[in-house]
Each structure stands twice: as C-alpha cells, then as structure tokens.
Image (cartoon, rainbow, N blue to C red):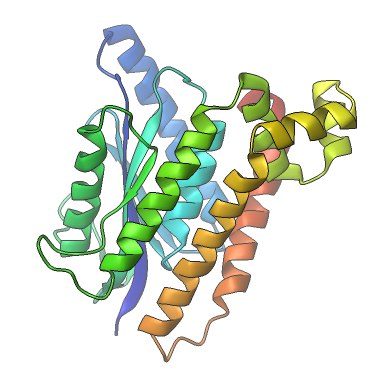
Length: 255
C-alpha cells in the first residue's frame, strides 16, 4: 500500500556564530517540534525530529502538509536575523509513518528534501522554501511543477523581504484572523491603517500564493493516487484551522 507523504528538512541561517545562541536556538527548536506535534495531532499523522544542532526533519501524510507547516513556522519564527529555510518534497512511500525511524530511515524522497535544502544553503539571497521533485538529470512529469513551485516561492519571498516590520506582522495576523478589525485591536491601530499596510505590503499576493500552492499540491496527490478517497481540501482546511486556533491563543508571545 502506498502512503502519500510530504517532507521538509529545515535549517537555520547563521546558527553557529555563537555558542550561547546555539544553546538558546536548540531549546527553541525543541519548542517548535512540540508545537508541530500539537498542530497536527488528530488532523494529519506526522513524525518530526530535531537533530544535528539546527535541523528539523518532518514527514507528514499528504502532499501539502509539510509546506503548510513550514509556512506557519516561517510566519511565527522569532529570530529575525536567523531565518529558517526548508527543503521540501512529496511523493508516495511503501510504509506507514508509524514504521519510520527518522534516525535511520533511508529513502529517495528524503534525499530530494536534502538536495532542496542544500540548494538553498548555497544561495546568497536565500528564499525560505525550495522544492525538489525530480531525480538528478531526470526531467519527469514533475519537473514543470518543481520549476513552477520554486518560481512562485521565489516571488513570494521577494514580496516578504520587501515588507516593513509592521507590514510583516499585519500579514501574519491576517493569515491567522482574516479580520481587519481584530488586527487593528491587537495592534492598537485603525482598520484603515491595517488595510493600507496590508495592501502596500502585498500581503494579499503572499497569502494567495500560499493558498494556491496548497490547492495544486492536493490536486497532484489526487491525480497521482486516483483511488484516493479522502477529501484533501477538507484535511488541508482542518489543518489550517487548528494551527490558526492554537497560534491565536498565544498571539502576543508568538508575533
């Protein structure tokens, strides 16, 4: 039986410059792992492990789940000078997640996620996300999707990098609450101010890209697995709803 999964390998930029910071970061990454387990519990089966200093490895059921989780992590990440970056992939495996030991598991998909992560590591103006879907020199049917995803993510990253601090916060709050009045109340601003910064910061385009990539990933999973009986859109919606609910409970500490 084939199991549709998505994978990310996450690293942190400039994480080894200071021993004290390294210890602080290690504790924070453990918190991120606990947060992921809480976000996914009862919604989508996920295994995640913090290992090798500043690395988190995650395998989750369904093609869109790893990207969804990575995006939310990137929005609440607290170390602005030490940003996370995610090598991503998806596909089918011949195991259930309960059978996988992330310390010893060897699989071509894990290698693709590693290659995607390493490609980001070599990039000077580093985007936060990169997909690797094809084998080296093998332009299979996923090649065009790989190019499309990475182009969209590069454009999305450019928009994010051009945001002011306030525009970035408003974008993240809009992702969670989707209501200008609520965001205005949290930030002690007028709704008109929130609307202006949302528009000038291209937040609509950033969040639309996030939504559209999820839709395409779910579509690819359905097409690749024609016997799929689960409602993938509902699963994605449930995951987003639970993450937003849990983040909203600690919004002052997280943003």
